[in-house]
Each structure stands twice: as structure tokens, then as C-alpha cells.
Image (cartoon, rainbow, N blue to C red; front, side):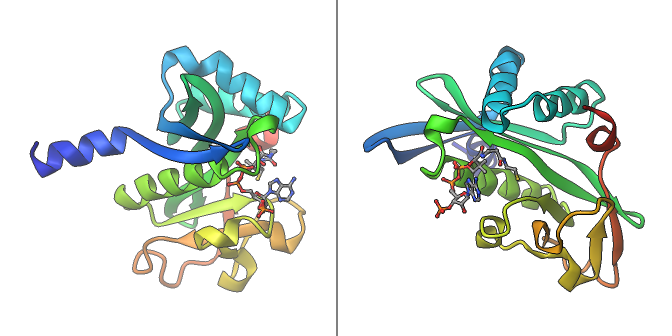
Length: 191
Ligand SMILES: CC(C)(COP(=O)(O)OP(=O)(O)OC[C@H]1O[C@@H](n2cnc3c(N)ncnc32)[C@H](O)[C@@H]1OP(=O)(O)O)[C@@H](O)C(=O)NCCC(=O)NCCS
């Protein structure tokens, strides 16, 4: 296989073994397909115990703002999901990570980490300048995210400083860029 073809194939699907509930299981990470939409909704609803994140995912997709949407599957069942959408600071467009969700019975076994690693790698390959995330302050730093305020960045919502984190992927494009990182409107308008 030519290197470019191999890269393309590896980019499309990634399989990793992971210890889940004490059994070694094969997790497939791949882009969502039209057949996954109900399962993705269900994963988000069950992980967040409410509809809002699932509704945001659907609205982003409907409005053509799903920059990247990956699922993690075990034996074909969707057990985890991550979505990225465009986010802007000044005239630079990067990505916002989230919503991201893993079915409750599969949490804390490394599936979320595999989704973040796979998604961030794809955005790096696509030369995305930055990724912003709002989330657990003890989780995202392990992927290189830093508190946004230390990079002179903030988000539009009144949230604790430590939950807003940024990963700079292209330091040249981000040189001198600071200020308010704007998410897609769906995050503010969809309930
Ligand atoms: C957050 C989430 C996607 C992580 O997926 P995961 O497969 O459980 O993640 P991993 O197994 O790779 O990593 C586990 C880490 O996630 C973090 N984490 C998971 N749930 C957490 C919670 N409720 N509070 C704080 N940290 C949490 C911890 O840092 C944990 O590390 P530890 O096990 O060493 O303590 C998943 O737990 C989930 O769906 N939670 C509910 C929805 C949610 O909060 N989504 C993220 C919004 S930013």
C-alpha cells in the first residue's frame, strides 16, 4: 500500500485494545455515519443525564458545523462520542472540543482519552491552529491543554477560570492572538 493510502486508511479508522470492565476489548474509533445518529444521541443523553448536549450535537450537525464527529464502538455498539465545531478568536478559526460523552458503564476506562487523542490528531493533521475546551480541569491538561487565561484567552460565558482550556497546535498562526474565543451560537441558543 502506498504511504498516502495507508495514512488515509489509518485516518479513517483506528482500532485499539483497551481494558474494559476487566476484559481486553477492541475499540474502534471512526467518523460518525448516518446510521450512528440515534446512538450518538443516546450516548450524550445518558452520559449527561439530560437532553441539552444531544440537542447541541444535532443542531451543530444540522447546521453544517460539525467539524469532526468521531464515535468509539465496541462490537459495533457506539459507546463514546466526541464532536468538534469551529471556534474563532479574532480572525483565526480553530476548533471547540465538545460535547464529548462516554456511556456511564464504560467511563473511566480510557475510551474518552482515545477519542480526544484521535480527534486532536486529526485536527493537527488538518493544520487547525487551536482547540478550546470547557471541561474537567484535571482531565484535559493530560492532552496538553492549558488554562486559557494563562494564554490571555477567555470564553464568552461566566464559568470558573480553570474549566476553560486551550491547546495551541500552530504557534506561528497563534502568535500575538488573544482575547475572546467565540463558540458556535448553538452552544448558547440550543436548550
Ligand atoms: C468526561 C468523559 C467523556 C471522559 O470519558 P472517560 O472514558 O470516562 O475518560 P477516560 O477513562 O479516558 O479518563 C478518565 C478521566 O476522566 C476524568 N473524569 C471523568 N469523569 C469525571 C467527572 N465526573 N469529574 C471529574 N473528572 C472526570 C477524570 O480525570 C478521569 O481520570 P481518572 O480516572 O484518572 O480519575 C466521561 O466521563 C463522560 O461522558 N462524562 C459525563 C459527560 C461529561 O462530563 N462530558 C465532558 C464534558 S467536558
